[in-house]
Amino acid sequence: MQRNFQRLGPIYRETIGTYNCVNVLLPRDAAQLFQSEGIFPRRMGIESWIAHRQLRNHKCGIFLLNGEEWRSDRLILNKEVISPAGTRKFLPFLNAVAQDFVTLMHRRISKNTRCSLTIDLYGDLFRFTLEGSSYALYGERLGLLEESPNAESQRFISAVETMLRTTLPLLFIPPGLMRWVNTKLWRDHIEAWDTIFKHADKCIQNIYQEFCLGQPRKYSGIMAELLMQAELPLDSIKANITEFTAGGVDTTAMPLLFTLFELARNPSVQTAIRREIAEAESQGPRELSKVLNSMPLLKTAAVETMAPPRSVRLPSAAPQTLCQVGLYAMGRSPEVFSNPERYDPLRWLSKEDNSFKALAFGFGARQCIGRRLAETEMMLFLMHVLRNFRIDTVSKADIKTVFGFILMPEKPPLLTFRPID
Image 1 (cartoon, rainbow, N blue to C red):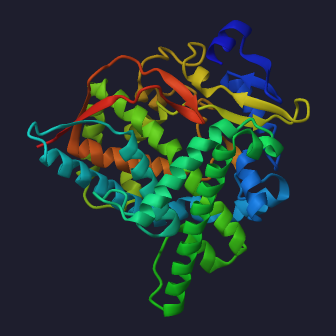
Image 2: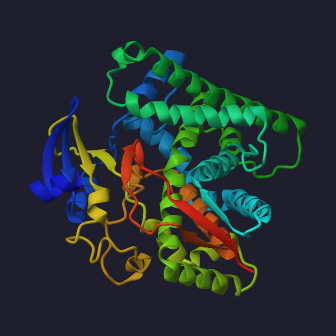
């Protein structure tokens, strides 16, 4: 897409499979795109996910819905998932998981005679984000950061991995052909989703048991709040929680991996963020949300690396036209950013107009509902990791990337963690 923008200009049309696509590069055109969506913005569904819901007679969550049903569910979910008040409630859950990750790294380093650890961290980041998001969603720990997760947790993480792995090859296959084109691929995809839904069922039963015991009311995660409020039907709650589970793992783990790599090859930025963390903590005990709000450089460290492609439907284009904002190309365009190839989180803190340049989570009513969960999860992770470790990299060469449902490294970088005395 980046080469096509260079060759064809900031707006061009193409056909991908059965989709007619219009691709947009510049922030001003992205602004026009988002601002023309109306009260029922549409998104491209993932057909294999929809086919599973139809096969098993499950409801679809807001990721797969459009129209009035999407809007009514979204307005209810916003209160617990993306509002500042809702976010403050699950912050301690994410913080506990971030602290446990640091403990895990210290434990591994203590077994190494070199007092450091060089590692491909992606698998650990996948487990960290699944542990954190599941704790916030279901109110239960999976134990994925322990040395030996139990069999049930292992089945769950394997199901999430399989579901994500099988989604990409099924992405552009018409639903009627899916089960015949690659029988094993389709069967694995369906079985993975079945396992994820069974996990949600088990957690719902556990929550209801707590309700029946009449124990003192305490916050037990997003799903428990939705069940207690009873504004959504049970099948809608389950549908949305499973979609949040699917959407909150790779999309958080991968930006964290890229951010750690950039900090490793930009030690001055790493030092500046560590100084910002120390200054924030020197102000004494405060509410966790206020601590995070006092660290703008820490937040922009992740913003600077988040440039996955996003797709939206443009109402003013021909019906059923898929419009895509090329965020990867936008982030590397000298028309949009000065020195675009340089990792520079400070650019987001300047007085320059950055409107519609940071769109990794989308914009408006249809922006990613898990945005605050992902942002706070990444910030807490980076805060605790940078407070405890210096990060280096074996190679500072640019990482070659591939598209595997999301943008990912062709070969994950090796990172070295050294404890700070």
